[in-house]
Amino acid sequence: MIPIRRGMRRPVRRSAGIPARNAGDPPTPPGTPLRPTGSPSRTGETVPVEDAPSNPVVRNDAHDRVVTEVLAARHFRHLSPDLVARVTTIEAPKVRRHDEAVARVKRKLHQIANAYTPALHAPRDAADALRSAAGDEDALRTLAISLMYGHASTAERLPVHDLIAPRLREAIHGTSGSDGPINPGERVEAETPARILDLACGLNPLMIPWLGLPRTCRYDAYDADSRLVSIVQAFLEAWGQAGSATVRDIGGQDTTETADVVLLLKAVPCLEQVRVGTSRRILETLNANRVIVTYPVQSLGGNDRGMRATYRQAFDNLVAGLPWHVAELRLPDELGYLLTRKAPPAPVSQ
Ligand SMILES: C[S@@+](CC[C@H](N)C(=O)[O-])C[C@H]1O[C@@H](n2cnc3c(N)ncnc32)[C@H](O)[C@@H]1O
Image 1: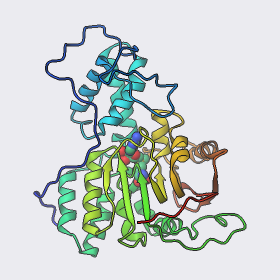
Image 2 (image 1 turned 90 degrees about the vertical axis):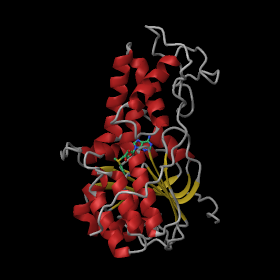
Image 3 (image 1 turned 180 degrees about the horizontal axis):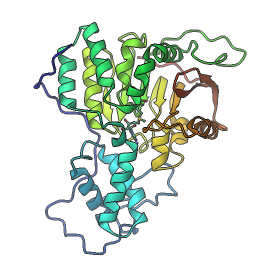
Image 4 (image 1 turned 180 degrees about the vertical axis):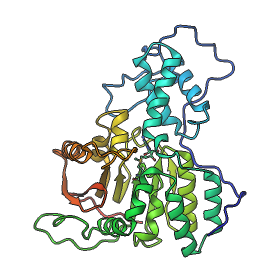
């Protein structure tokens, strides 16, 4: 086992957040409404939320005070400022008072992010341990397994790791893993991806040693939690995998990057909890050949509660009318689908 050591800390790459109030800004008058008022923001624009095509952030002084207070809190300061700002735009107008808005935003952020990481301890030490093990494949595999217990979504896969890893590997390479031919009536050749995007990745990129990817395959991972991103970045470097991990709110700006395979694992329910329709928009705007979408079949508390049937219906609605062939994946303890584009775009050139 690799000893966990302190030192060699690196700053995590963060996407730009909204600026905090400047010391010289006038204080917010008591009773300033939390609803977007149409008054100009710092950029001089106010965008109505519901009419907009994606998820713009509507800013005013009251909004910024909520964001600043949430990001100052110990349990929330590791989250993407863009995500906090977007959730505030949606949640704060539903209540009248500042303290109610702060509580409401925190509750939502807990549901979609913090609820998955109660077992995540000492993320900086984890990143340091990974860097210390750089180049030692056996040590990195051992570390990856132990670190994946730190996120509820990857921890759930560990009891079935030997079953799920080959299925994910097959789906990523476009060979099988499904209950039928990927495109009905067509034979599909194995295709090693040149670029993978892992959206709302959690600690899933620590599965890379079991996915049969060449080190030259670019693996780019996004999550709203900077602690997870720092661990994933350290792992990618230590394993020698091309690609990077970045703090990003994937429900904010459209993801228009080109990739061979996109992973959207257990992330749809989180995205839809903030704003219904976000996942469909991601599927509409992605420039990818294949997408793997999965859903949990148990709640975080371990209850079944008919989730498989509920999410099967949700998935059918999600892809209805979109240009993807759909095949169900045989994944243990997870509802999974492989989407292949009906008319694929040109392959990625590196
Ligand atoms: C259910 S977990 C899934 C993690 C991983 N995909 C897996 O299956 O192991 C959801 C993850 O999404 C992240 N998340 C939630 N909303 C997000 C957003 N809008 N942008 C980026 N990440 C988000 C959370 O931090 C959390 O790690």
